[in-house]
Image (cartoon, rainbow, N blue to C red):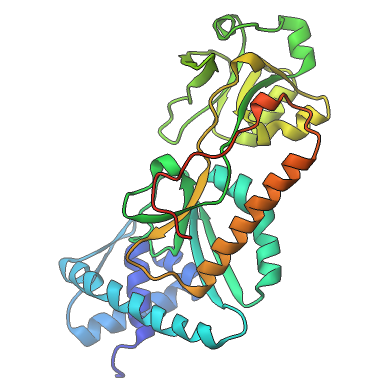
Length: 329
C-alpha cells in the first residue's frame, strides 16, 4: 500500500465540499469510481472513516470535518506556492473558479469571457452561475461576482459594471389592446409579467418620481424565474414587464417593445462587483481578470457616451456610487 497522496486528499476535500462523489469527480476530471477508490484508500491509510455514504447523501464524519478544517489552509498555501511561479512566466496561467449571480453572468461575463480567454490562452475559467448566495471561501472559489449590496465586509471588492437602469416595457399590441398606464397606480388594471426571487417570492416593482420612491404590488397571469420566458411573453403581448434596460434594449431598438412610465423610471440597481477574500493574496490570473473587466467597463462607458441612445437620457445611470466595500486599485 502506498501512503496517502495529495491527489487523494484533494479527492476527499472535493467529495466533502460537494457532498457528492459524482460532482467531485466532475470537478477533478475523474470517474466517480476512481474518486471513491481514492477516498477509501485515504481512510484505510489513516485508519479512520472520513465520509459517511448513503444512497442519498454524502457527509463528513467528525474525523472528516477535523481533517477538512486542517487541510483547507494547507491546500490553499500549496496552490499559492504553485501560483507564485507565474511571476516568471510571460503570461499568467492556471484555472480561475468563479461563483456568479445570473444577472452578472448576463451583463458582465457573457461578452467578456471569450475575449479574456483569447488574450490569456494559458488561463482556464470555471464559472458556476448560482442564484443563491454562496460562501466563496468554503466553496473554494477564487472570486465571486454579485450585486454590491450582498457582499461581506471582509471582502476586497472591485466594481465591474455601472449601475443598471430598469424600465417598464410592453409590446405595442398589448398597449393598443389594454391602454398605456400613466402612473404606477394604474398598473392594478394591467397584466404584469413578474420575476420570482430564489426564495419564490416575486420581485417588487419599484418606482421613483421627484426623489420619491415607492413599491407597487402588481398582478398578472405569468410569474417566472427565467429571463427568456419573461421577455418572450412581454414581446408576445402577455403583459407589462419591469426589467433591466440591458435585458430589453434589443427588443426596444427593434420596435417589438416600447417603454412606459419613463417619468417614473425605477431606481437603478447598484451594479456588480468582483470580490475575493481580503486575507488572500490576489493570484496573477485573478489580477489579469480584474484588470480586464475594469478595462471592459471603461470601454462600455465610452461607447455609451459616444453613441446615440434610443432611450430617454434619464434611464441611463449617472456616475456610479462609491463601492460599499474596499476596492482594490
